[in-house]
Length: 258
Image 1 (cartoon, rainbow, N blue to C red):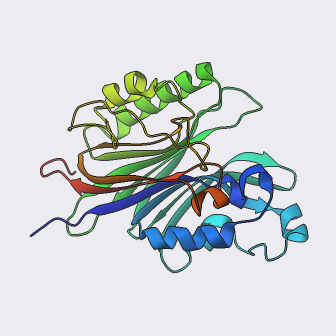
Image 2: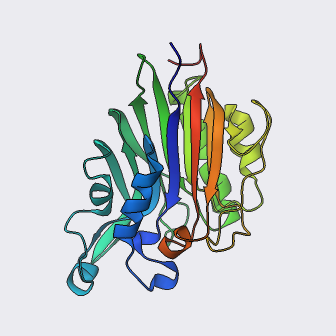
């Protein structure tokens, strides 16, 4: 039986607002995500609650953003708040068509004014008894903090994931591609815009979304071959967020699934 491709997307949604916070874009965001028809969606800067926006912004959804975006398309959702404030909180989220299990949010905060977490779960894949470890990340703007966070993530996954199939996706803020040495080689990962399996890849430019020049957003995989990878920049994406979205189609490798 032919293995079905797994479709994934990662997107920093800028808390549901366009660049420079000019317009709320959660309805347009929901429409574009559904057009991509992904099985698993990795989201960063997801607004779990914002009481001031709820009062002042017309048509602000009653639900947290991850639930609003998932609707009846992604039956399993996972959200973890990383940044808390008086009027709300935001963090990372994973939306999935398949069951989510064993969820954990790893606190990797290094600087008190910059709260960060790494959202990890196991997702059961279709057509088999297999599962994949999925991690949604949003790393620090500062190199020293990013290094500590990547090292912490690698150490954690070495313990819980061993050689199982693995997807790490999100906003790495890593324009110098230091994740190749600190994370990808250590865990045996392939960057989806790279070459053959086992060959380090050069991440695609994804920021700013209108005309990307920085390589901030990533998808790393292990236990999958990459059938297709695409960056979604320019309109309509550049009207929705300051980051481009990345998508990929992945084929599970025989013998690699746990």
